[in-house]
Amino acid sequence: MPLDLEQLRARLPGRTVIWFESIPSTMPEAARLASEGAPAGTVLVAEEQTAGQGRLGRSWYSEKESGLYVSFVLRPAAPEGALQLVTVAAGLAAQEAVERVSGVRCRIKWPNDLLADGKKCGGILCQTAEEAVIAGIGINVNHAGFPPELAGTATSLRLLTGRITAREDLLVELAERMDHYCGILEGDGGEAVLRLFAERAGK
View (cartoon, rainbow, N blue to C red):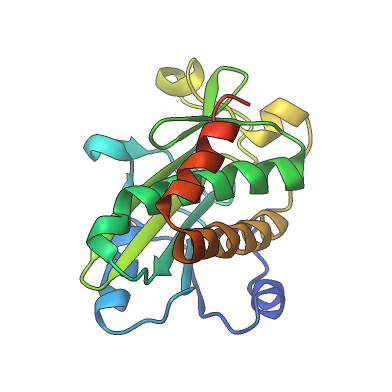
């Protein structure tokens, strides 16, 4: 079932929310929009990515209408210097959003993986785009299974809980948590975010 875009826009007032039925990856499109002046907080979300990006050039498995495949346009004060810290903030946001919405307790594996029950359920990839940072987040939400080559290392919230999670709820919570942790980064500095990461990384 596709995301309810009308509901998302109503629950995320003041944000630009852009939806794609299918796209190679939300990240290059977010970077393009950022270069054209897209405001901070712009959200790009896709039902399917045909060339989803992972760390070190790896691909990200993006089954249609099953996961959360989203990129946020962020505008920290110093984009180049903030890249790693934004990755940390995004990891904290994703971990907390997953736990609040689904009850699944994930562990953050440095630098950008979310693990649950020893398997990967999410990932974060951040890149600079001129005066912005693009935070790409993929979460395996309602996947009923994975291809054989991934089955031993990947899991989903559905496999972990035995129930369907509303992707709208997860995206709204994720956006709110992103605002929270990026606000800490901007207001209190990188040390505050790293301290929170250290506290939560092993949980």
